[in-house]
Image 1 (cartoon, rainbow, N blue to C red):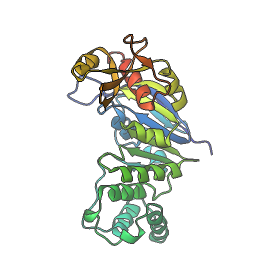
Image 2 (cartoon, rainbow, N blue to C red; image 1 turned 90 degrees about the vertical axis):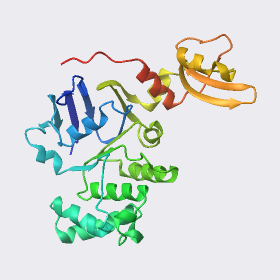
Image 3 (cartoon, rainbow, N blue to C red; image 1 turned 180 degrees about the vertical axis):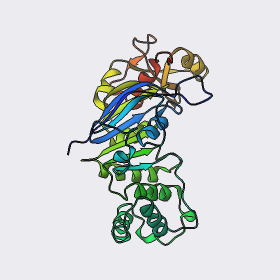
Image 4 (cartoon, rainbow, N blue to C red; image 1 turned 135 degrees about the vertical axis):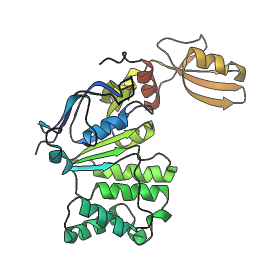
Length: 298
């Protein structure tokens, strides 16, 4: 079965807010992992809530396999798994009880739910902790139980919104591995402001800023955008503020002879600056965000 999401001209304005959270955004999504990147407040979570049929756009349409989800949201909901940014658990329930409760909400019969819960607890490596109250779980364990509940109905579309915020490096790495395993015939949308999370699991990347889609491409093409625009040189510590004001700074390394600064610029920023051969995806992201977007319009 062909699987696709089409987001066409979607805008969202919240009551009491003059600016648009999303502004005429269009995006077509096919199976695989789409990394949705953008700074906090860019509109990513708003877009995720619209796709998940939790909120409606002020203008524009989202289609699932050419069906308008605002007219028939159940068409999408029955194939959707969603882990929101503010995912919360019932602290007094254990993993078994919580997942049984969520399965009942999703209309999964108890016999099917039992086997599915067993399989998912193995998948997210929480089998041995299944009888522990969720209130005693670490942040990483709560995120893994969150992905388990999102997978209860074996969804064709999986949305995870800022899933690694607050996790330690080991927890982030484990979560990335989980997401990578889920790719294939389903659509996985990973929304985050952490570039390294996207770099680890997604080659298809969409960058959003101020409610606009500013770039959509592969990680390779993003890197090509800054291939000849990354420079570094050594400055005295006292010059750092001046460099920050004049240039798009991507990294600073302290050395015994001063600070090695790395900037993104279309031309050589100073005479002593050396061209960097291997720009990072973080630098490509910063460059795309720095290009700016148009003014909001209704």
